[in-house]
Length: 83
Image 1: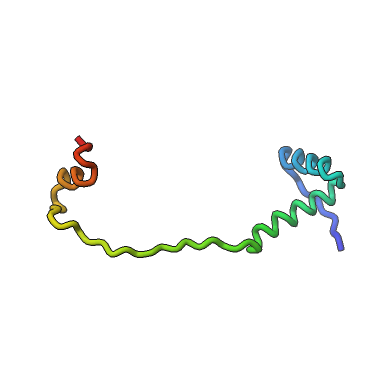
Image 2 (image 1 turned 180 degrees about the vertical axis):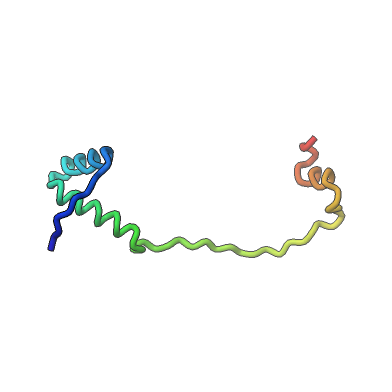
C-alpha cells in the first residue's frame, strides 16, 4: 500500500536524491523510498550498540608526596618542566 503525500526537500537533499536516481537508474519515487528505508533502519537499533567497559583501578597517593605542595606535585608530574 502506498500513500501520496507532499514532502518539502532542501535543495541539497533534492540534488543528492537525483544523483542517486541517475547512478542506480531508478525512479525518483523508488530512490527516495529506498533512502528513507535505509535511514530508518540505521536508527531503529538494527546495528549492535558499542559498549564502553571501564575497569576500575585502585589508586592511592604516592609515598613522600605532599598534596598541599602544588609546586612539588608539578615537579613530580612534569619533571621540572613547569617552570
